[in-house]
Length: 136
Image 1 (cartoon, rainbow, N blue to C red):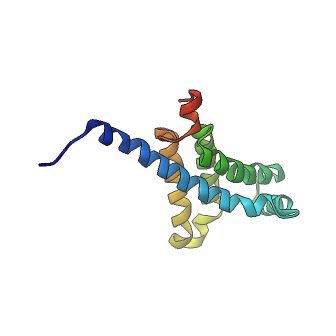
Image 2: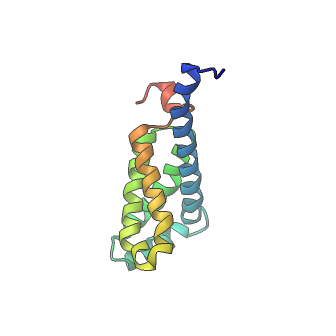
Image 3: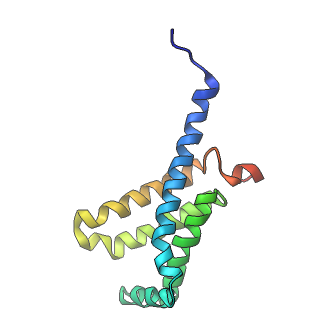
């Protein structure tokens, strides 16, 4: 006879959101690290952003959104705000870079956009710091 437990089934969405949040946070931290941490990396990335027809300062914003936003997602702090900023950042990356590289180039960016939007809508899940301090 199968045993059903409402407490274990009610934890599933929160655990799924946790997995989604951590996976997105790890990807964004990884991709942002190379744009922030090495010597002059942010400056080089900002020049690349200028070559795409956007302002220089936006390169710094984009790099910090990826790196700091990824860290915030990993720890589950300001989860929805970080996910929204990451979604916007990835939409711009899609429109300015990935769309010109064919479907192979677009796949990762589309997945990151979908993940960021999902986290923004459903929140950080079970083990997010947001839940501990009372953020929605």
